[in-house]
Image (cartoon, rainbow, N blue to C red; front, side, top):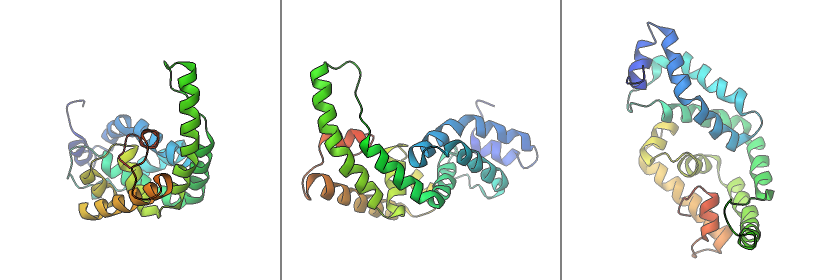
Length: 197
């Protein structure tokens, strides 16, 4: 089944339900990591729920893309909306974490950690303040590296809406971290998975 795309597998799974396990095997770890970042400790259970819902709704899957991943991220994002308080607590906890990158000189690591720590709290506080819809779009692009079109499929919104949500989210983050019109420092972009904030 390695050479068969998700859309074909899902279509065939209406007659052969056991084939849906291939979709699970392909994408479970990515969905679990996404949920781990978003809500923390309940990620395994919620990831299982994503695939349970996907299996139950597989007849509604629209083969816009060959991969089911955007659709699965959409289901996951909807489930996260039920766990908003936990997500905000997780974002605030992430703001307090210390990190070091391997391979750097100790003094460089210390300086980087100090600077990153000073940005972490404002960044994750800004994420916590974002409207849930804007945060969903931003994190699907920043953490999961989905294209705007894939985010549109995942959230069942037009691509233009994805762009406007990202614009609002980036503006709030820039205002919080760089004081408005300035560009966020590289450490903030690194914390956001390289996204241009």
